[in-house]
Image 1: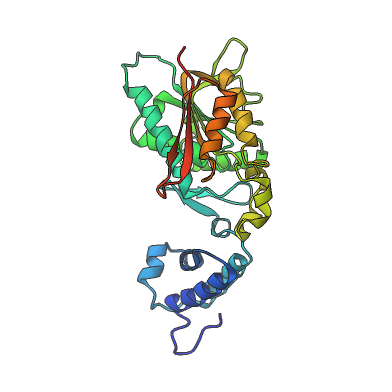
Image 2: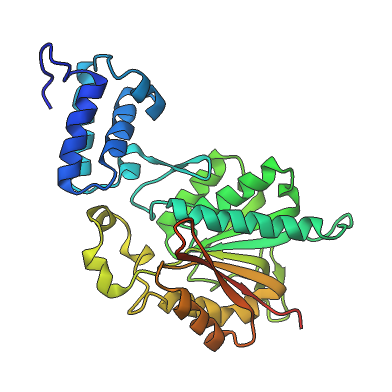
Length: 318
């Protein structure tokens, strides 16, 4: 990517075009976007600035940094890890190898969780001193879901009536979630717990049942749902992400089934669990719900592409 002389290759647009070709050849399905984001990172500007100033020359230090970023991306490293940030639900979240990169499809879970919480807060008058709506994000990773939910509720001035617990089995991921919560000013409405699914939850701000376990009104979970057999064939960038956050067992639902088994002791009557699933798991998740939480209403919502994406499981009131 040595700058050309007088042929425009040393400009922002010229270097982006060359990088786009290289990344496309390396297998990126979003080569142009990747190149623009990496150029913005090298120049310290956003993507809009990259597009607007395509004819501008790129200073040598920025060009060298850009080249290094492109080489890393050619090797498959996610753009989010190279930049150290990922945009999610209108937020810039810190992202690195400690946790799975937040995906756009997970924003649907956030939207549904916010709508569910808002319904609970507005469907009937709340008396002063009423207990907050208790929400848990199981397998929080970067904290994307938990932080986005509280941030969205804060914009609606509803966050003071909600308490969110973020749980992850990985101490590194949980530390990243804490960093994102603090960075976005929502840590005051959150608690953080290291554990496998609901294991060990039972103190802090959560309400306790008779057995001493925390119970919640809304459960959010983007758990591993990739089949073990598919791991090796995933895109190169996924090789940089934690396998623990991807591998869902032979049919992708092993971890989700364990969560379903724990819901009767962790979800209040009338409570709702929102679970992200794979695009081919619509029928299998409904079968799993029928087996592990028999009699509980369960449904699957499609994403914008019309593919199964979000399972909703409700605990009957009686």
